Length: 421
Image 1 (cartoon, helix red, strand yellow):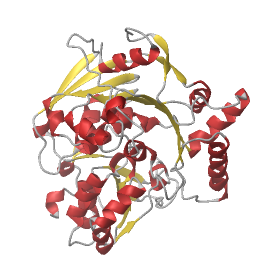
Image 2 (image 1 turned 90 degrees about the vertical axis):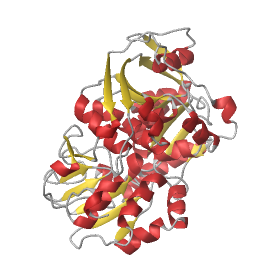
Image 3 (image 1 turned 30 degrees about the vertical axis):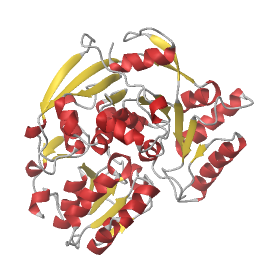
């Protein structure tokens, strides 16, 4: 079996499962943000259960429109807060005490290798970076999980992605996953698992892996997953007190079946940019051409970790944001923001002319705190560049790494980091 099949078999109480089978599986954690939670709560209340299945295995994270941008979103968050209080939900993360869900949950030790996690957000697949099977589901599935702690799934097929070689300077997990999606296409892995393997993976930080797993959905995948290794163990030791009891390290068998196997040489990948309006429209940054920009946003669930901010600060250090550009920084969590302050990164951003903001999804989904105007162009470290994603249909989003985004903010146009550093 593949690593994904082994995790699903274990949670279904089975010796083995095969791709295509329908199973009921016990979950380790169900997560929802305020937008998916409010719908789930409405469905949950139709069931009328007396209690949730386990108040310690539910996480509610208001992050999409928080801090509340208007009265409507304030009422939504208020309803989610009341639900958490009524049912004694342990992991409710109030604004100012949490952050963006997919950065926050691993940071808080709520994710461990071998876990089965579902979430009311498509980028729940992020947790596959730690060797968990994590996938986004609809709010009705979240409601059912609130009640019974199980999920109904079809076992997906897997695609094996083999990476070898070592990435060069300025090449990060974001560049690697953009390059991969450019090859696969946005529908190249529909309801399949992207299994990231190969000796090249050993050169990738856990932050790189989070970014890559996060964007598996952009190829249509059910999830993305890495086998837990020494770096994973070190990360989990720092987040989970009883990590030894929580670690379930599954590995794919040598004779496991894959739909296909693709190989990539990391040494040949350059910094990438996904041009409007699909994540598969990928080019090396030097081939994008002269593209003037209006805004740069760095952070979010894809690239809002401290490692990402360090890279961006390295580019910004001693420089100024171009006069025609506004640059916004969104750390993934309060802890990341505080660490950025302690390390002097926040000072670097502010001295460079950036706005250092609260952890929030904000402009990523066109919510607030940086929505674009008509025909404006933005370089973003987020995961989607669909038409109208950050504002008007005429606006444009270019996806890039923190290094490329920061360099572009300084240059006033899409630029390679080497052009400004």
